[in-house]
Length: 41
Image (cartoon, rainbow, N blue to C red; front, side, top):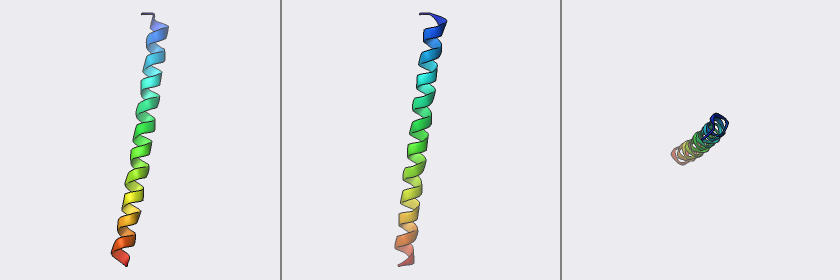
């Protein structure tokens, strides 16, 4: 495997991890807002 190919794979993995963490963050925020909404009423 060439170093260039290895770098491409690393970039893809990093992008995948970043997108996953962002999605998780959004899910947690949505759930938190929903909980606040439920607690208030």
